Amino acid sequence: MLRTMTLLIGLATCFGAPALAQDATTPTANAPDRERLRERFDRDGDGRLGPGERERARAWARRHRDRVEDRGDRREDHRDRAEDRRDRREDHRDRAEDRRDRREDHRDRAEDRGDRREDHRDRAEDRRDARHDGGRRDRAEDRRDRREDHRDRAEDRGDRREDHRDRAEDRGDRREDHRDRAEDHRDRREDHRDRVENRRDRRQGPAPAPRPRGPRGPR
Image (tube, rainbow, N blue to C red):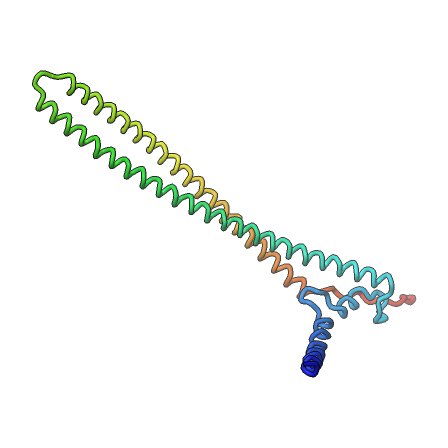
């Protein structure tokens, strides 16, 4: 067991040390190159950065790093907002499906009420045909049928009002979807601009510093 552990530790040391050294020496994609920094901020041309030149180079590198981090934060914010909009669109679709189901239920209930009204009318006609002296029982049944018809019409009006509300909510959801798609388009444009700026920063890098000129002699 001890021999196996020693062998594993040795292998990890052999293969892990070069990787760590490579990670430590390999610059990141957005980090400025030291040679370019030296060419830009070496004012006196001696090939080395003095204290003031080193401070200016560090300030520029910090600003460059802050800009890159700001663009990364903006991209993350764009992604979060896009996910929120996707969740809202899914909620809108779910609510639209619920409203469609409610409308189908309303239609089914309206058809049931229409069938009941036809049955009432048929019974009323049967009673009128069988009536000879206009008895009180037949008149009471007629009044009950009229009351049921009135309730059915009131329920129909309520269903139409609910359908109108559902259609208004559908229009509101479509408007929100349109706004979300417009925001997605704006976010994609901002991401594209950030990527273009990142590529331009990486291509340009720090500009070389002007070489010092010697004193001019008399003409």
